[in-house]
Amino acid sequence: MLDSDASGDVSGTVLGTFDIFRGLNIAKRELIARELRMSQINKGQFIITNNSAGDDVYFLISGRVRVCTLSQAGKQVHFEELLPGMMFGELSAIDGLQRSSDCLSMEDCNLVLMSSEQFNNVIRKYAEVQQYVLLRLASMVRGNMQKVFEFSTLSVVQRIHCELLRLASDANADTSEIVLISAPTHAEIASRVSTHREAVTRELKSLESSGLITWKKNDYVIHDVVKLSELAFSKQ
Image 1 (cartoon, rainbow, N blue to C red):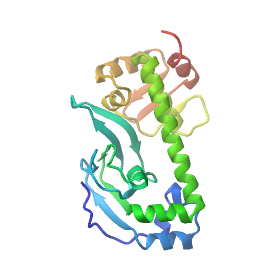
Image 2 (spheres, rainbow, N blue to C red):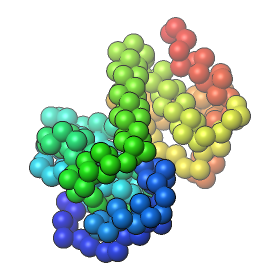
Image 3 (cartoon, rainbow, N blue to C red):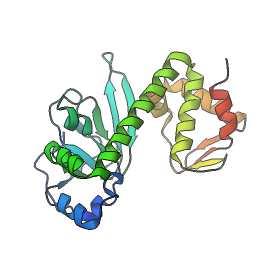
C-alpha cells in the first residue's frame, strides 16, 4: 500500500490538470494545494486494497491505475482503468466505510493525496467541485447499470463488442473509424467482460477477418463503429 508519510510540494497549476478543479481559479487552487501531499509508487503496487481502512482521496498525475477486486476463486474482476487527470478513493471519503475495491498501479505513478476531511470541506465550499463529484457519481452508477444489463442479457461475444465500443467512445473521435492510441491486452479485455482470454482472442481474430478492426501492436483501429454496434446488440 502507499506510504502514508509521502510528501512533496503541490501547486495550483498541478491541480488545474484535474477535471475536478478546472472550474476554480488559480488562487483557489493554490489555497487547496497547501494542505496536499504528493507521492510516487512503483508499478505493480497496491495503492488501495479492498475492505481496508483509510479514506484519503487520490489524484493521478501520471501513470495508470486499475480498479478491480478478486473473487473467492481468485479471478480478477475489472471495474475501471484510471488515467492521468482522474481521481479515486472518493467513496470512502464520502461515506466513511471501508474501501470497496483494489487499486493497483499498472505503471509507475505520481499521485496527489487529499485527506477525507479536506475533500469534504472542498466539496462544501466550492459549488464547481461539488457539481463535478455529483456528475462523476452519476456516471459511475450509469456505467455499472449498463454492465449489469450486459452481463444479464448479452453473450460473451456481444460483451466483447460492447467493450470495444467503450474503447471507441473513450477515444473521443467523431468519425466511424477510430484509431486507438493504446489498447488493453486480450487478458485485460477478458477480465472486463468476465470471460477467458481465448474467447477474446478468437473473437478479435474474427472481427479482423471481417475487416471491422485491426488489432496489432501500435496499430489498433476500429474501422466501422456503426457496424460493430449493430453486431453488439443483434439477436444471436
